[in-house]
Length: 215
View 1 (cartoon, rainbow, N blue to C red):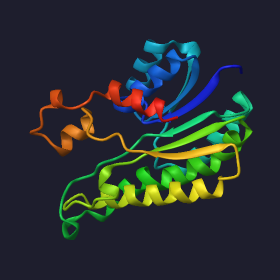
View 2: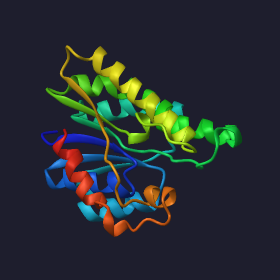
View 3: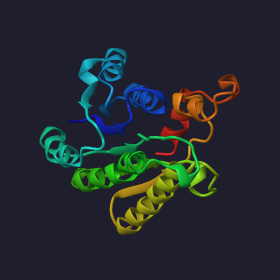
């Protein structure tokens, strides 16, 4: 395939959705992963079925994630961009009151899923002339905040994992980076700050533009 191939998680809404649209406008073929089928279908309608490969997938299913690499290698032979955008906020509460099952799910999506994706996508990234792996983080990874336990801890773990991967690929064609979108008018942001006026925040479109410039 002559087009650049870009894999985006959390593609059915928000920053992930808008990133896919903008990359498609730059003539990329989009591999869009999300759990919400309706959102993926809306994305396909917007950018055209010929420009997208839809993967309706729960990120907690590590076994299925591991199968993606060989499937995509057979279809495309390489991957130019991997944008690890999907994330789960979880319930904001004192750590002493956290639900262990929910804590594990937050880590499964924010950290462990990306480990599986690195494992399965690394050969495709390595096969590209020049590739990018971008991991979307949050300021709470570096600046812990009360009641943000699972999310903050998982983003700190994600940043550490991404930095290790960056060091391991330093002499390769793969550029690994961490992207902090900052406050953005998304559904996740609204659930964390329900009294906030979203009109005072950058839109998901604006943040997607910043992310693409960071590639």
